[in-house]
Image (cartoon, rainbow, N blue to C red):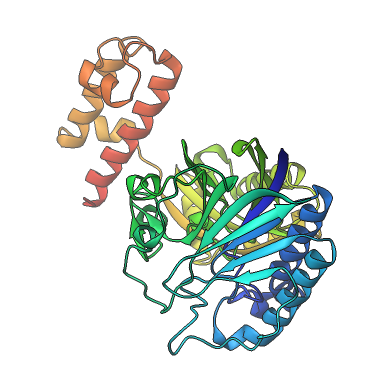
Length: 419
């Protein structure tokens, strides 16, 4: 029998983006509502695909200071699912644990068909449709905010016979997948720990980036449903996944978007601009390209200026990037919000003068000139090519550009004393 279910996590309902309201009150309110709109889109998708159930894998809420509004909206969303015969399975994570000082649940009367998993002891709940067992959903909630135990090992080892698809619901930090994104290693586990339980699908939460860790069995982070800021893991498209099942096995996992505001860092190299107006044009052009690719959502942007060039002196003459920021705001459309611009630029290098200096900087330039050998990087040592990843296959133009950037970086650091 074929069926579908929806897997979402890390909704952080009613969580505003700190600092945006001071810039634009309307934007602050819009971002706060965005997490709630993401929940509405999850419900709409589940109804649209006739999902058998929806799994919420932790961090439904963001914390006790903003809980009541979020909990009421969540209850009402589950009621809409229940009215369509769609079951809901809810696990709590580190932001909304079931027990301890961070336990602040105000909803106790849940709609029919809703299972809120208990803390620390996994429960196993069957899902049936028309008298046939579709799946067994196993899940657990955090008992405390800082859950350090490997809760994966508390799950039962299923034998795979009967029960349809076995789904494990866990908010956790899989080894190698959490720390790189800046998340705490709550309920740490390994892929082998998860595989040892013989589930057909692990519905995970905690990491705010969609990623399929394995397909045998399926181990999936859907990512968070709404970006919450400009940290790298919060940027770009956000959403949940629809999981398609046939004959007790997962056959497809399809992400879908739920966000209504997206965060991006827009980086431009000042070497490509002739003047300050050119810098503003570059930023504005990048913003326009992003807007064309991401229609229908608000864009929250941070500019970042890099590189070396003559424009550096003009930018620093004002000792402020506010005029540039004002200009790019004027150049951008009504659905684009610029927060600020970071400056990571450096002065232009007078290479002719450096070549005559007779110091280490000039030696670096001599080596670079020798490697170029008339414009082609034929003398670049093999170990550098190997570090670049494609020995003997790097196009000459690309290698030329990479080594030019490296030369500017090294000579620039030597010129300023930076290490």
